Image 1 (cartoon, rainbow, N blue to C red):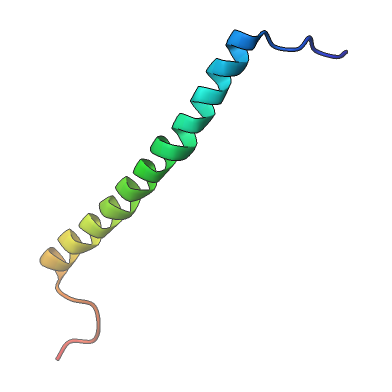
Image 2 (image 1 turned 180 degrees about the vertical axis):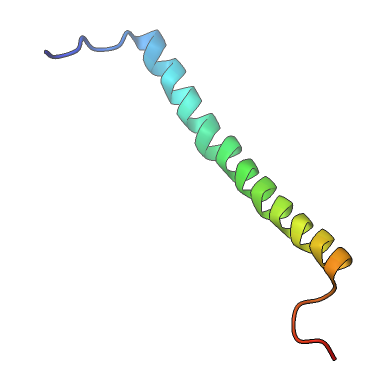
Length: 55
């Protein structure tokens, strides 16, 4: 069964949500994930030492 088209107010809300996700949320999320992974690696290297064979 076909859905009825969205009212203009809902389309505007959906467009603003899409722009928020694309422009702000996903870039900030990717920065947080990469930064968090780097922090974890840094902390592990402080505890376990640098990677590679022992000298």
